[in-house]
Length: 280
Image 1 (cartoon, rainbow, N blue to C red):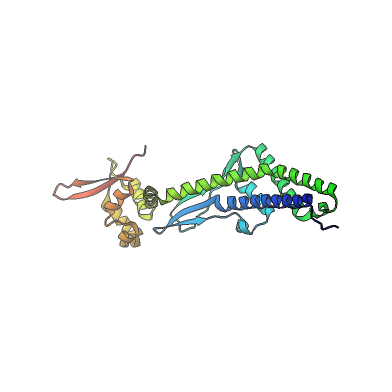
Image 2 (cartoon, rainbow, N blue to C red):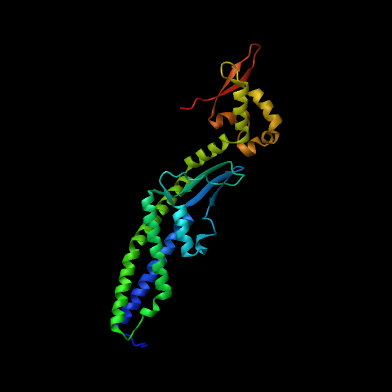
């Protein structure tokens, strides 16, 4: 086998490198998509955190191309009409916000994508593991055949390259938008409000209201406070630290779930009542 360089042999090597870079970029796109298509923002015990949720089987950066392809087909492409499974969050989480990127597509598209990904994987393996028999530096005809083969190979995988690049850009834009949303004061207010509305004390007040309200729809705050003292004494003892309110009345108002009023009593003084607001 001759090792003499010629313009044609140099061009073959250039195109081999070009195709290898394309395959590596495709693999990088798959890893990026699987790494960034699923994350959850949770609040637990008053603290917030962004929890990354990777695909099954370990981090995408450590997976083979075949595993990446399988996970892309199962985690990102969702056949139209199929129900997306609920996402899991830590047991301590009291509220969660999820970013999940999926493509809801028809079965024909899934089948076509499966075939294209299979073709791409086969072409990559053929180049990496079986190209050497085509490398004949002293044979101009064989070199020209190799050039044609490499161009056909590029054309076969270019649609997949373009598809994965577009999906990566969409996810990057979605993640950027989510990051801006999470960093906004309004999101923090809404997230804290959602956490508060699902908290043990507010849940208890909803139960007491449904059970002990008067005929006019109002419930005595003192009644709910007595129940809370029995069932959640620790929550009451740390009301300011955990909820940021100095009184149960302030807590109810802050939850934005209740109407609250003070009612005068016949012998003087007043008592506080609350009721669930009507949702529109």
